[in-house]
Image (cartoon, rainbow over all chains, first blue to last red; front, side):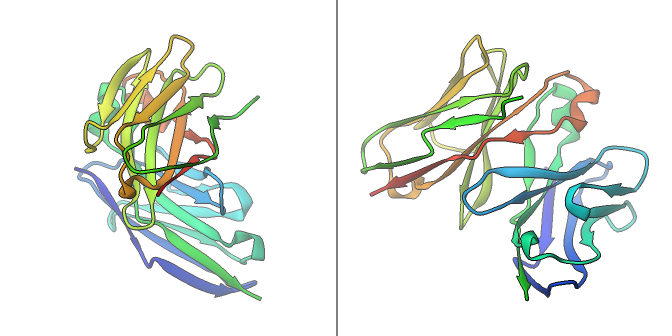
Length: 118
Length: 118
């Protein structure tokens, strides 16, 4: 079964510093990959997704992620952190087997809570 | 365009009771999924419906059930509530095109229903 691992349940950076949130997936075939953000008392909001083609994916709020097949990674980055970026971030993968069946299930990582220090 | 609407947003129940949660997907979306989110287990897939049929089911006991109506609205029910059922229940909808091209479909989440079992 496909899975994702997010390294670091908590990440803390200073305002203006680089944000790097790590995600590794397990799959023999490049899957579809997603990053979602969750603010307190809210649902999940899509930041960006990787399907096929360009390996550097740009998302909302200045975030981007690079798909590296050789490293089975899809790390999320942002050059300069803002206080408003404080939230929990989830990496997710969609199973190829289920895609063929037409199912939409996502498998999520455990999440990384991002704290921004002023 | 209205988003995914979940009701109620908050509810408190006691052990042994049952609860029904409702989800109205984005207009035109025919696939509805449910996820349970807890601090310990993270985001876990409950089930997925398309055209009133359950397409996929997660590893939850039979106390958890759901259904989808002809207008794509969905409900989930938990019977004989246990303390461990306290969680944020998230509903997500997506356009369902089926087959390999559906892999990139984005799940749009509602704000969730927070259930507390006392």
